[in-house]
Amino acid sequence: MEIVKIIGIGFVTLFVTIILKEYRKDFAIYAGLIGGVIIISYTISYLENIVDFLKGLAESGINSEFIVLLIKITGISILTEFAVSVCKDSGESSIATKIDLGGKILVISMSIPVISATLNGLVGLLQ
Image (cartoon, rainbow, N blue to C red; front, side):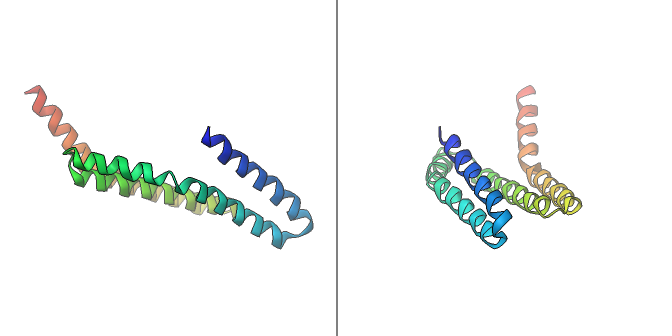
């Protein structure tokens, strides 16, 4: 399973940074960055599958506006979670909470067209 590899890399990075923090704090930062880059570079190859899937959806006749919204909502969610994690790691949980709330509000506001189209379709089926 791929997630086990990602978690393994994460834990190894965690242990290395914990050990380095005691002796060389400057190296601990670099170890954390290197571990993060390794994890991201490992997962980049899976983006091709996602792009192919989205292309298939676009070609199958599904409204391309919904696909664009899906990508934007996913991006907002990922970036929000990343920013929240960075804030929490820095000890700023109050800022993290506000970023989280802002991200949720953006996701809900961007979801309104999809929700509206879904409800209109259901009403059309019921009539």
